[in-house]
Image 1 (cartoon, helix red, strand yellow):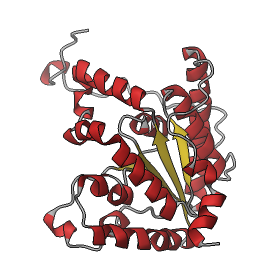
Image 2: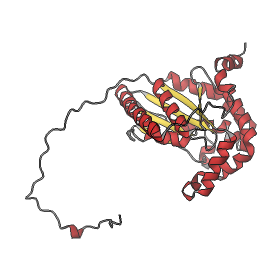
Image 3: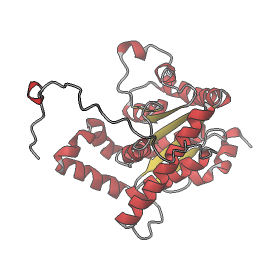
Image 4: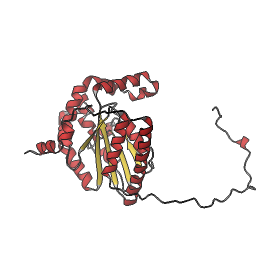
Length: 284
């Protein structure tokens, strides 16, 4: 049996499951969603504290369909965390200089040091997705990526990096609904890029590219985990719950029973008059 065939058998749940074919069930009540999110976010804080204390290195990759819910999930993950130890990397188009570098080079500089969490909102898998579909790379460049990405990720994991890769899936009707919401809501129009608009017409091309990508990059040491994204609330909770299961952390949060008695401010200290300062108008 070939290496690819073994991979396909080992991870058939990822490759063969139709996109958007989730078991929706009942929608979560807003109160239930918020309570469970708060519980999971506390666990994320515990996880980050453990990572910092033990000097672990965690890399999260978020890929998937446009409007599948990656950004919202990333936001809920980072909300409670210390930003000094958790950074989101969302790179734009490569510069002329970066185009001449080794493909993985500009991603390597963002990899974590001990105690850090790095979240890639789109990653080196751009080459297997948008670059492949839109013709932004040559066939030779794509083939080289397909050959080398498993070796690259093997080096990362051997170095001690915990690598977790998420693919966010969304059905075609739900994606179109979200695109229309972005058009109709001025506050969300920045989310609708020219690439997103073009992607609407290339659903099958992206499906083919994704299936090919899973074929060569769904590795035992760095598998893809698919998140069904038609229900945003469930997708966020499911992803965070799964992430917490991938880091075997313990609760090492500092125990503070009560604050020590505070020293009262001096009443005799002279302060400049308030009129000398510029204050923001109290409009509300």
